[in-house]
Length: 240
Image (cartoon, rainbow, N blue to C red; front, side):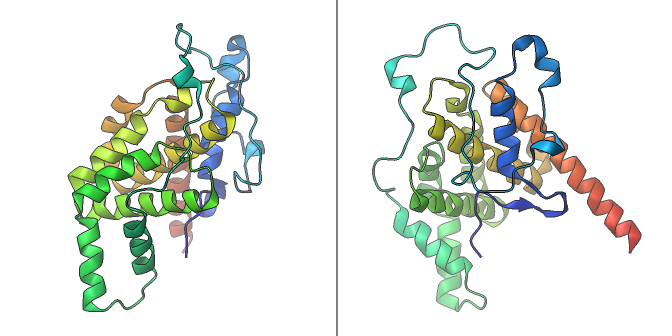
């Protein structure tokens, strides 16, 4: 089954996208009310895809850099040409659907998980807004590949790419194209959630890489949601 950016998070029923969009929406609140605008309340749970729900982004971001962005910084970070390793990602997506892969398929999957060149190239894909449904699916597959490589592949390369995505400062720029900023916030929320869930020891690395207040708030929301999921899981186990 293909993982979509609008994936529902287990028993809590809150989308990862909500962890990102809640922050972007809350940043519309004046700075004097900042203490009341952090986090995502249950009333703001999102239940549809970012393609179906138009996010309201702030006209300006609190604590933004004092200098005005250059024309290059304000341009949409949107993919405009095919990803160089699109074929490899499509092969990996196909292999993941195999229930009983044959020896050749197992070998190919292992090679992809240890292909440092492909893994490193995923950074540019994940810090660029997809701009299309096909691009979105490529990003989903890229994240799947990175997370599997983190467990059983070229771990060092996977960690380096995940860290670079976390450190990317595009979503901190309120002048960025609204749709691009929304999509990139969704990517970052997914990376933060799945990476920290797969490797809790990475939390200090993640926190050191966060580039600004928007990313920091998304990370805070991810941690809150993970604690809720853990508490609910323990509660369900105790009831058995």
